[in-house]
Image (cartoon, rainbow, N blue to C red):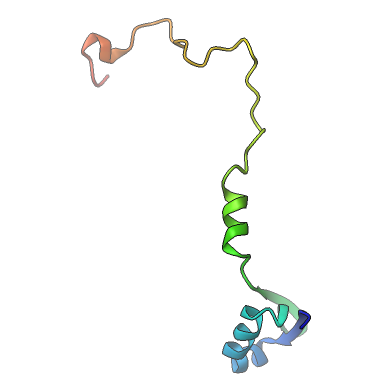
Length: 91
């Protein structure tokens, strides 16, 4: 069974909404473009598989930050003492 794309009017979508959603969910239809007076107003597609979504979410920023080899991430960044070290909690 091959997935198809369909264009329907908003009136037809309203009348057949549950059937259309079922067909998209079963991947019979790849996408449905809903139109009002011939102008597209919405696109209905099935969500990606959960595994794909998780893969895209976790590690999506991988390799976007480069830390120079001589940079020490554990070194202090402030030259001045912290307020908490002096017993002051609020300024």
